[in-house]
Structures are given as structure tokens and as C-alpha cells.
Length: 153
Image (cartoon, rainbow, N blue to C red):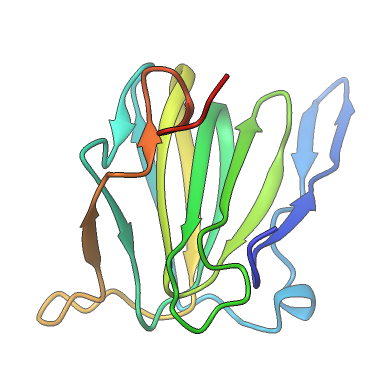
């Protein structure tokens, strides 16, 4: 696991009225969200196919609440003990999880089933004048085969 990445399996409570799923407890993250937003991707679409992105100041807390996605994280941080590691997660309808993506970790995702709805809780408000978003050309992951590039199979 990439240093700083955390995965919390989410429990869904169901009854005849519907379902309830607790996503975030500040007491567990020790980081209250300063902004929460929803992003979606249609089936087969990769958000950031030609590039991955990362934040230098912001931690992301990802949860796919509808559909399913393949979330890929890549550690390129110079000072990290897990530099060079790639983590892959299939999350969503069949596997509800809350994933912590530390600052400096590259990330991108592909919608695998239906229109995927992702809630992202971030620890800093988005600054439109000075965005904390940095793109890196995708030399790491083959989105068509859903595996790291240059990996023998």
C-alpha cells in the first residue's frame, strides 16, 4: 500500500425503506472536509486518460456511491518509502470504500459500470485563482487493459 493511502470498507444498512451508508467521520480522518463535491463519469470514460493529476497541498477522500470505478494511485513522491508503487482499487456498487489519497500521490479513474458518481471530500477549498492541481503525462497505466504499463502478464 502506498504510504498514507487508507482504505475504509463502508457498511451499508438496508431495510424495507432503503439504504443508509455512513461515509465520513472526522474523528477517523482527523481532518474535517473544507469542501465536498460530486463528479461523475460515463461508463468507459477515464478521467485524466492522457495524464494523472495530483495536489501539493490537498488530501482527497474518495467514495464511489453509484456505479463502479477503477481508481489508480501512483506514488512518485521523491521522499516516499513507497515511491514507484501503484495501487489499484475497484470501488462502487459491489465494494463501497472510502479512500484517502494523500497530497503528492498521482490519481485517475475509469468508470466501469454505468455512470459512476464519486463524492470527493477535500481538506482545502478549491482556489480558482491558484489551483492546487498538477498534471503529469500518463506513462504509467494502460487504461484499455486496466493494468500498469510494461507489466508482463
